[in-house]
Length: 356
Image (cartoon, rainbow, N blue to C red; front, side, top):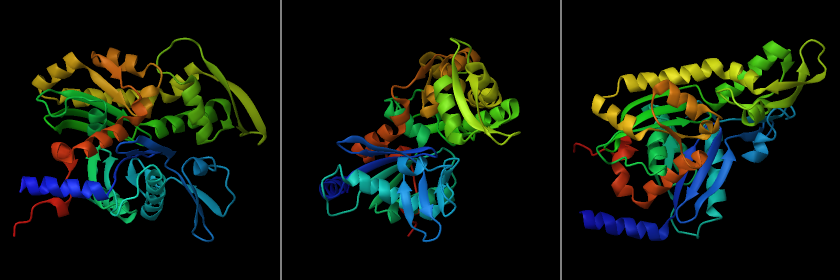
């Protein structure tokens, strides 16, 4: 039976391609087996409301955010890591898979696809991702939780009887997970991540400086001067609309402003990590104390976050190499040997053995 299955796999591999997708709230990355990461685009779709036609996807659509005429809407079809607009997500996946196909040899069958989703997603959400990916042209769809994919992507020993701790700070959600023996032992998913930090900055600037700025400006400021511990003074100029006069105005914003803006959210993130550690079995906790905690996802790049986590949790903290691509790389590693990693995948109802 196993030999027959392996032969069937080899046959399918001959006639179809393999794709790994990190389906993120802020960015979606696509990995093609044998080529690496070939697409990294913002998860934004611009739609013409009059005709229902998709005008742009990815970076071209993101540049339209806050700049569109009334009949064009720039939509983010994923909110907090889950699909909020099924049809637009399908359109986005179709576009990204077509982009990926430019890097692949032409094959008869649709691709096998591994998709990363946040930990703790419901069966309904998993089915939505599976259906959207199949409708976008996939032959087979495998779903993996993002912290697990991230751990595999940075080559942690997920199958061994040893505890590993991963924090994946994405755009919509942060996933905190303890992994051992091919499974997630403890996890927590919170809605404190890149988008929340951007909103914190928008609110802070509105309250403190009486200036209205957009999300794109807030994100740029976060990347330029954002830090969570005091260090070398940083500052940048931001432009927005004065709420009192209604006219354009610019002000200088510093790293300490950003720390104050994001302070409450960072505290919530630290508290969530503490909670996960408090409920972790002692043997695994001792592994984590010895081996440390790994940060993946775009939020891992916030200046000083690793130092703050290390001081708060009393653990060694490591920022993964190229944390933005860790989950997509993990999806790619799973594709290399689906059978070895089958235990880490989320089974769908149609994959479960029937009783008949």
